[in-house]
Image (cartoon, rainbow, N blue to C red; front, side):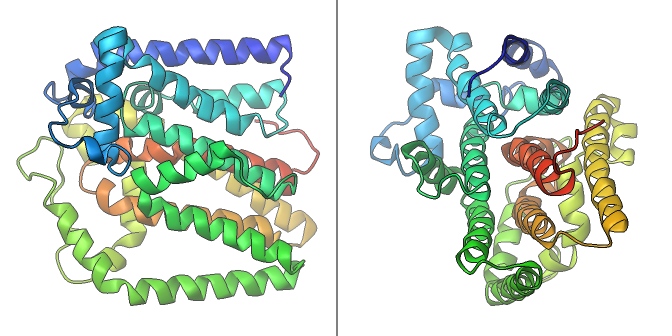
Length: 366
């Protein structure tokens, strides 16, 4: 992608925003969080105490980060050891956004949404969040190419991204795979409106069938998640989500929402510092509402539903939010942290769907 000087200026500024968040995370953010965890597991990764686990470097995400973190710390020092992770997360965002034809105004809005504090902090230090932003950005770029029918065959970097996806967040693998399968089937059989609607219905039935078949596995995993959250921790919520068998399904609608949102009104009244995250989530929610409202207006004006755009949004959002919610619903801090692993993907993908299938060639006015 050849960039104009003005676009280069925006990306140059965004890179320095990422650098700012790296220093902010290490020297400021740690003052308001558990100092032993140092923004997630940064200290653990930089120490790189792998002992006899060398053989697991390419099959265990934690060991992999400890390996790279240790040697980055040796060669770059404990502060600038985070710089390679700033670079890869930046590249993930750049790669995916470069696949969309954005005006300068649209690019500014996209980069603003990708500069919010939680995303900036967690994606700018060594950790699974920074790596996730990288591979989800690469996968998003590949997905856009497939939707544009510019290529089907994955490049080496795409294969690397899928490998990292399976290694770091295997629960997202089904979500991403389902989106690609829907697109490939639709293209293979040249499905039109009704054909795509039937395919969506079949996909929903498949989702219900799959969840039913795996109901006991998912149920047991939800109870296992609870064990990782100490009830004595400062921000851990009372477990009202996974008490009885199959609560993971009955509580899914609210759980998926709150695991994405983060702190509630009650929680920010008890810990005012969390109001920053609450406002951030409100901004993101308003952004989603804007897209949904424009989608509905388009339907009312044309009396037609773009079933393809609706299907892609539904499949991606449902699977990702459902996969994320058990690990994010019991603690607002965990909710924010885990959200950053797929947040960039959702922002870029929604921009693409809106511009291509909803707004068409009209300009996006925000």
